[in-house]
Every structure is written in structure tokens, then in C-alpha cells.
Length: 395
Image 1 (tube, rainbow, N blue to C red):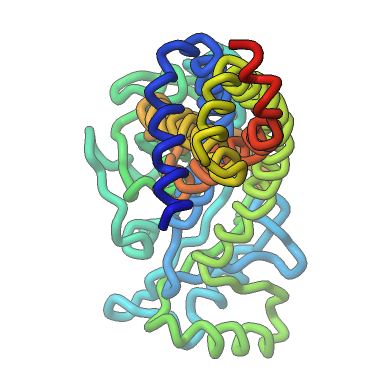
Image 2: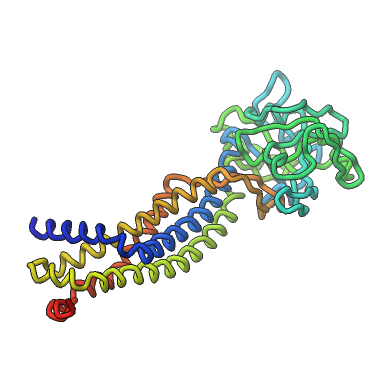
């Protein structure tokens, strides 16, 4: 109990003396704050991209690609194959019609609002069943495109990030002029990064004949996926790979998420090393300024371990203050910030929002805590070993 009272007493004195060392303390706090802001910014990008991809798809929707294809971009299916896939047992039906959409995927160049440079955007050709497959998708502005016309609807994310996609405008892709007649939302999923049109019109515009790249089907239930996969695997007329839509997009997100995290941790470590030196400087200045004070406490019976612990506590409190300020700043500046980036497997832009999540803020505080502990230990050791007689002679 006596030891704890000593630690509390010395810590209180340290905190009361902070105004005398405002400059050095501020340097340490700002350094740690910067580390947490950068860490949260980079990692919130990964979290946001991952969340957007995870919001896309459902367990009871299957996406079918050519066998061996890793993405829609390098897949290819004939009209006959898409008919066989849609008619496979396990696919939900609306009356006599299967709920399915054979789709075509092409990339078009559109200028980004952020830098006025061209970027790849997905132009997707769909069949009538696309909206029945994706139940959450809804037109929020304008109207649906008419079959057989050079009309298209645009995802809200694409509309916000790219130039010339406002409802009512005309835009030229290749040799064809297209009319934007509406905008749609899909719960913040990656689908909102796309532009949609009639698949037959898209085939003609890009001379794709009667070919498709994927088929999306609504299954009778999520449990039907395995039997659906097996039925198609046993059918000699098709050579395809079948994924649940949720798993497909989760795998698409994995590579970029890992890359961002791989980039984020080394940057954080390098900045943390700099912040540790800032904390060391601040705490060494604190110990030097309070040398006679520490010696007086020791002469009055305060133990060296109590001085050591109280100095580490002071460093930790400064670090947590920097971490809390950094987390708050990161949340205000970055959370919900809408950006777009290139998805590796599709080579197209995906629009997503930064996500500064509670667990990310906790990780930032842990980083700050480690910096405080490491930066405070050596100065605390010096304070604990300070020769009492020498310090008192300097009074």
C-alpha cells in the first residue's frame, strides 16, 4: 500500500509539472498522434474496401464462370451454356422462368473527378433477371433502361467518383453514344461502382457476338449451392466453376486488402520509431528538469522503483493522449471518405468508403501505448538511478 501511495504521489507531481515542460510534452504527443493518424488512415482504407466487397453478394446467389477462370474478365460462356446453367436444378424460378442473368463485362475509360484522369470502369450487360437476382438493388433516380436501346443506368458510387455520368447526360464509349437514364443503389456494395445496360446492346456495340462471361443465379436456398455445383460438374456440356457470390467477392478483396495492410504496418513501424525518440526526448527533459525534486523525494524515503513506475506512467499518459487525439482526428477526417481504387482481378475501379472502425481505434491506442512504454523506460531508469547526494548538491 505504501508503495502504491508513493507511485500515485510522484505521478501527481509529474502531471502538475507538465505545464513547465509544455513544449517537449507537446512534441511527444503530436508525434504519437501523427503515428496513429497515419496508421488509422491506411488501415481504414483496407477495412473500407473489405467491407464494400463483403456487402456484395449473398450466400443464396451463385456466380458461374468458365472452368479455370479466376474472374469475370478472363471468363467466357456461350449462349447455349448460359441456358443450360440457368435451367439446372436448384435455381429458383418465377413461374416457369429461372431467376438468372447471363452477363457481359467490358471496361470503359472515364475521367475521375479527383484528378481528371482516365480510369477503368465496369460496363456490365445484364438480362432481365438481374434485378430479381439482386433483390436489394433499386433505381433511386430516373428510370430503368429500355431493352434494345443505347441506354444505361449508373451506380451511385460511380456517379459520385467519375465525370459525365449524371442522369440525363450522353457519353461516348468506343463508337457508340450512350444515354444515362437512371442511377441505382445496392446497399453500398461493389455493384454501385458499375454501369449497367442491356446485354444484347453491349454485345453488338463491342462485337462480342452471342458470348457472355458469367451467369448469376438465385438459388432455392444457400444449402442448394453444393448440389448445384455437383450437377454442373457432372454435366459434360459445360466446363464451369461455381462460387457463392459472397465467397467470390471475399476472395477478390483478399489480395488488395493484404497489400494495403502490408504497406500500412511498415509505415507505422517507421513512424513509431521516430515517435519513440520524441517520447525519449520529452521524458529525458522531464527527468533533467526534476532532478533535485526526484532527489528530495528519495531523501524523504520514496523508493527508486516508485520513481521508475511513476515516470513510465507519465510517459504512458502522454502517449495515450496522443493516441486518443490521433484516433479522433482520423475518425473525423477519414471515416466515410469516398474514394476509388483499382481492383487487381478485374482491372476496374471499385468505389468504397474509408472505415475507421472501433477495433481500428483500439489498435491505434495499443500502438500509442507501446510507444509510451518504450519511450518512457530508459528515462524512468535514469530517474530511478539518479544519485541523491549529487542532485542535492546542485540545489
